[in-house]
Image 1 (cartoon, rainbow, N blue to C red):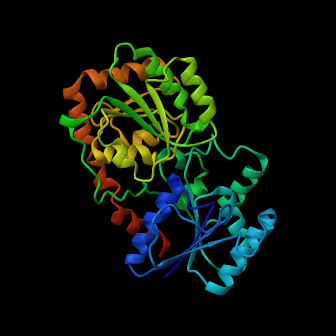
Image 2: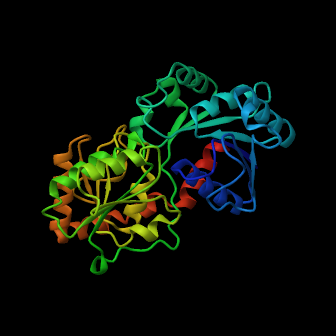
Image 3: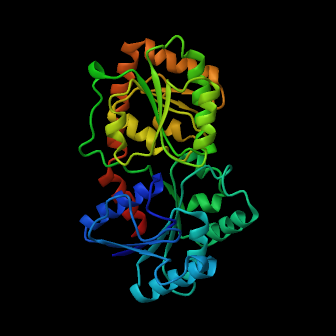
Length: 354
């Protein structure tokens, strides 16, 4: 089977990591995948199977000329020449453009909603894209039941909920006897992730947890703003922004605690990865329910309401102080591995493609 992915890029990001894992697993089953990236060169920061071909809209075209028409033409050109059995996109706009590109070619189209539909795609153009996708996509994959319920019944009837796959082969297991006194989070430095909330929460308990630091892994447009905010809070020697890391599990495996402070998410990959390691985890109840798909409160982690630094601070302090409870929840969190097993998730996708 031939599968065409239409993606913005294959650099850092949750959707890109999922694309890499799925295409690798499909390659092991003998399927060919072509990934068309529309906003970068044909470069991947994630490993790709030899069954995967990466191409870019930039190939033989000036970057200045890459617009909607150019993307539609490129998708149609690939589809007519390569004849894929299915086209998949994790992006609302690119899926809509792909739908237009394959008009009359009788190729199935699958869209995957990766976020909170009520918080993203709010511009008029995005709403138009969404209408095209709702009408033209043959299948829609959601990460959470909450996101699925944001759509009409007709969309729900042709949809399925599938969690993100995680390649846990070689993943470390958190060793509670050798953990360091650091609290970690992972995510793009963007408003959605709300790292400022976590900094606020940490500032409330920084004196009580005098030996602990906060490490925020990730890169993004808010770096300078967050650096200034950390300085304003006089936490320069306690809160650190080391940037994005490709093998993030190696950097967080010895942390005392993982915290997700997002306002909204699809299924948070960073939370899945932290749980798979066995880290004690605290998360905001980010819409449309991604954290609740993974965490059962007080069983394998803690969930607090969004935007409340005091509640977040209390939960962080509880996990640090109540070591026995933190160890119990971290051990239970590791069981998420079976739910996000890459082979199982890849097969679920193949089930809807067929």
